[in-house]
Image 1 (tube, rainbow, N blue to C red):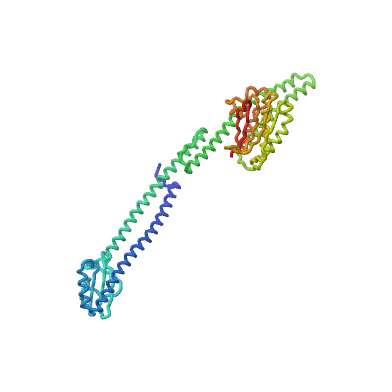
Image 2 (cartoon, rainbow, N blue to C red):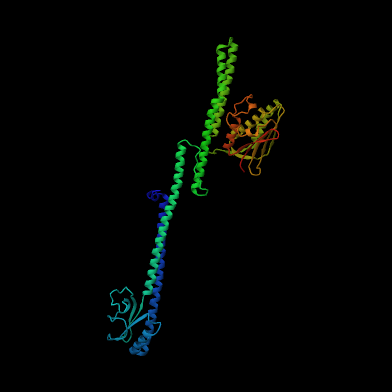
Length: 454
């Protein structure tokens, strides 16, 4: 990847901003530490000088200038006191003791050059000095080398500069690595989207196996692509099925009309032929209406506008409505309903779904079959369930997943009225409500279960 492209990524810019904020915080913290550390050492140096000056003033009061000069001379040669440098002048300005260069006496704190340095650079190995005129006119200067303080300050400055440079380099390097990974994942998504736009709907965005934001985004996009591919496959299937399955009723309709045009000899025969043609037309219209209904339910609309629905009340209505129909066809329809089972849903759609399941059981079981309708509350691992079971011939296991396809009909059911869309509509309504449909062996017969998640 080209470096300018890496530098333009949002992740690299965020890394630089973070590095800048961290650097500013580090400079602030270092400034406070530097100020406190050097200030503490400077106060220690000033304190030791002040202690020396107090002791010398006491010596001068007790023994006079000669005694003071003798004390200073002994201190300059005593072990452990060489860090101090002294100067003692009498009232006339004559040196009495000490090795500091003679200069116009100046009281107070000051910085002077180290002896034998010639004063060329008073800040190089400079001395921190305190000058004071005593009561008898004697002038005393006590000084101490600040080289130790300067070394500590230099060490802190160099250490911080090196650490800051390393931190900045690491931050920039980390920003480049993060940017490279960002661009790699982005290029992967871009390549996949280009291949999908070129027509390969089976392509999916690769996952790294982690739990990062890119993997969550890729997972959501792959789910969306799965949905789009399923819709496209469904559209192709519907187009093919319509072309195949609608050919027969349209051919039959044309045959009826042809018979009415050429074969009818009387008004009664003509009317009967037209009635049969109208019947075929109604069948075709019902098929298209069912297809449109399935398309509307499966359009991927969000599950909004759903209100609490009592499944028991819907099941009781279906049992009451289809009970006489079952008796007329020599079936028995029984209902076992648990009260208070409520789910969010569309009452009309749920009623249509349950009615389709019951009609399917009535239509495809022989006379004398028993059909049961049950509503149960939460079961282990799932929520409320609707069950429609019968003891008829059932559906072979390898066919159960196919019967939800539009226009798909088992061989034995092709001689019965219908268009093969009933279970497709059931599956679409269940999906619309976030439920699942499961077909199982009822031993004997078929058990259809619509289950909501727990």
